[in-house]
Image 1 (cartoon, rainbow, N blue to C red):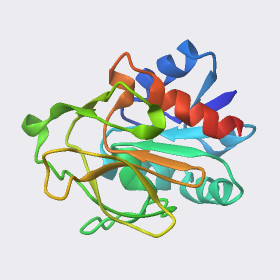
Image 2: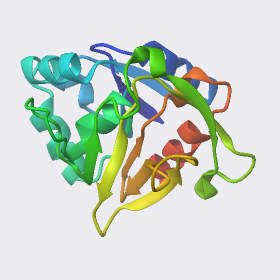
Image 3: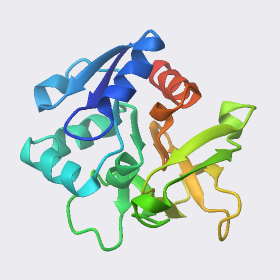
Image 4: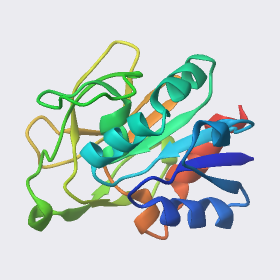
Amino acid sequence: MKIGVMALQGAFIEHRRVLERLGAEAIEVRLPAQLTGLDGVIVPGGESTTMSRLMAAYGLLQPLRDLAREGLPIMGTCAGMILLAKSVPGFTLPTLGLMDITVRRNAFGSQVESFEADLDIAALGPPPVHAVFIRAPLIEEAGAGVEVLGRLPGTAGAAAVAARQGRLLAVAFHPELTSDSRVHRYFLEMARS
C-alpha cells in the first residue's frame, strides 16, 4: 500500500510513522506529481488557512479533487476534515469541497481549550478510541450520503466528530498522536477494498 501524506504543514510526520508501523509505504506529498500511483491520501491536522493557501499555491487542489472523483480514498484529520468539507461557514479560502458536510472551525475554542476524550466508534470496535482534540472542528451538518461514525458525548446534540462518505473519511481529532492505530487501519482497509 502506498499512502500519500500531504506534507505542506501540520502533523504529517506523525501520520507517516503510523502508516509505516502498519506496513504501508508513506509518501510525503508536496507537489501534484507526487500523487501518481497512490492508493490513498491523508490530509493531516495543522492550520487550515495555511494548508489551503499552500495547496492552492502548489496546484494540489484540483488534482486531489479529480483523484477523489476517480475513487481515490482520502482521509482528513482535524484541519484535513475542514479541507474535505463542502461547506465551512466563515472560511473564505478554497477547500477540496468533496464531502457533503458542514464543518465549524475551532468549534471548542482556542488552543488552550484543547482536550482529550474517549469516543465510541462502532466501525472500529471496542474499546473506545482515545481522541486528542486540538483547536478541533466539528461536523454541524451531514448530507444524506454521509455516515456519522462518532459523536462526542457531553456536547450539545452529541457533536459529530467522525464521518465517512464512500471513500472519504473525516475525523475532528488527531489519531496520529496516540498509540491506537485503528483509525489508520480502517483507512487502509478502505484503500484496499
